[in-house]
Image 1: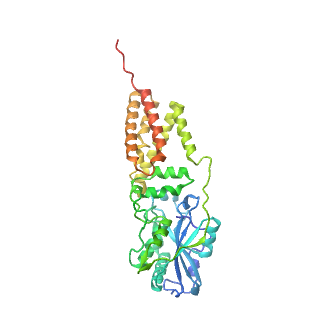
Image 2: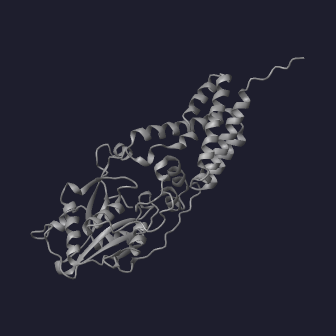
Length: 378
């Protein structure tokens, strides 16, 4: 799901428009080929899930180009705010196929190709639809992690060109989006943890939509159209073995070490800092849930673990109000129990379990410290 602009795309539209009289009425020859390209996983954040693009090759017209729906412009005003809010505009661009394949070769990422086995009129219609999008306002779309991305846009333009919902998901429809995403973070522990706790209820729905490149590749292999396979057998254009990165810090061991330190320190200041970090993260999740248009961030029940009420607990503790420190320790402990029970059947249960245990220990410890002693009457 590559979402950056390639280095060699200064001529984003010029490559196509250089043809004399080029427009969407340019006729493809009978030997024209249109294929779906699926690109392998990388170790950069934008490349964790792979990428999807469409290739149009027609030797008679001397064209061999790739249509890429995964581009955005870092120079967009208020880029970070727009990306966080979910109204950043992505767009379709083109690359000469040679540049496209060279880029992935230099990145050591595999590329697979599946030729669409459709009639010339349908190829022409797909080609026209791609160019209509490229040279009009249709070029832009608002990115959504599940519903609108480089893969879903390819599915949509092909289905539109075939006049029916031909391409549908053929596997893993009984798994949640969260479960489907989880293995893609192999070697990137804190990215896996971060996405686990920042996503809300939407990713716990069954993954019935195609939203990842290899989901599309696998579904295309099982799709028929007009009583024949929609695509030819997948061809490997580039093949590399993905290297799993090794890091001294980005792993479960540092995560467990930090939490174990919090438990064993038995220090009031450490406990306050721990609760402060969790509460600020919880406030961030709440704000993002209301601020952002990304539906994946809404209704985030992980705030039961990262409770903003922990900040109130910290403040009462700082002001040495034992009564309310004790009460808010109990309130947050109850929220933690509710969270634990709700999370048991979720994909991220085991990755958040150490946090749950640490919070439970520190909350109980805080409650015991601030519980009013029972007077003994002799």
